[in-house]
Image (cartoon, rainbow, N blue to C red; front, side):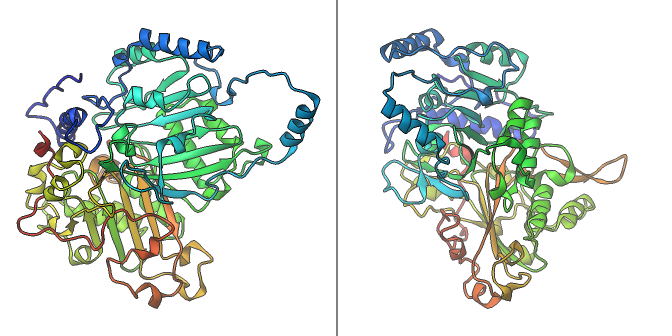
Length: 556
């Protein structure tokens, strides 16, 4: 049973208070039971960390050995030292006696080229949800992990359910590396000591307050590497098992190269390596990415960000990515953003995000850094009112949902932020799922470009692609996307960013001429059909005079 987290003091900042609120809400969500459509099978943790100390290791080990003995298998030995290249450890093979005909057939089969990978070009899916019909655009956690052939998994998450996660993998064939938060060296030691054989950790550095909020997954199989960027955490309700919540998932499969010398790096692969190195992933693991073909990622934009160089992180990094992909826009764009949490946002953050979505890194960087404290606005500019929409559920939408209030513990905004005079309420729309009664923990940005270079010439280059989407872990807050300020010593802009986040930008092709694209309204997101699922109802309903968003304290 989770203990009650310590309440932050009066001098705590907004992020500390929000983390405390999430912790309390997660406790309630863990206790949410028979009143819901399906009882979540999670033991939510008070702080969201991967707390292996909660596991009964002795009982689990006895159960594991019993299972292995029944199958006449030998348990996998633990790595003898931390420098082993676990990426290259193959799954155990059961030796069997074969007759000459079988051996000849096997040799012939192995000589054939490897089978095609399931997602060679990448795809965006919605998570399956219990009680809803399967569609071509949903996916289960089992279908993502494929435990029967998974050799290695590098997983990161903000919240964890240890027992549930370990039930989704086979530790007799799969090695796990978990990128997790630990408060101090003592907790790191406890987590390592309590980890089952075959489980290792890396602990991304936390420079001050912030959250390890990334949800990146790297899954290695015999013939390919699967890269997954979900919006949800490694808990059952985020993957639809309680039937009350959904998320989104980007997934792409990268074939193994016959020779690593043939590896051609892309900007995506380089940024992925940088991100993994910054997290503290073993260098041999990072280097092993060169064994796989990243050519199909050339058109994708990595969205991982930490607290390093200005143009590689937060909304500044998003702007640079959009410009590098050839998706920058000089004119108006239409932006629809889904969030599961809203921070203490002001119009200037939304302005920076809008500029970033246009690929305007100069404006994104300098507009905020050069603004004086007295340059405050009481509301968003008209361009934002016309072009930028933020989707977040009203209290009524949550109450009327399939799981009710008890299912909304990870959907968060504080009352004092919403009632602040400079909160951009005019931009907020009710977030109602297209699957009736299902709540969303998704984070996505849908951007449509109204003016595109060479629009009459077709869709041959990204410059002519009229839309793109972001799918990842980042909500709308300064902790996630950063705040640009002037450095006191140099006078140059610098970014302050607290969270580890990860996302991907996906260009979307569509009608090649301006008239065809302008045929729909500002709420017409049909251009994303068959490319990126749009999970919310559009046009989103504007909050009325009596409407308020879902506040985290309503779950208490």
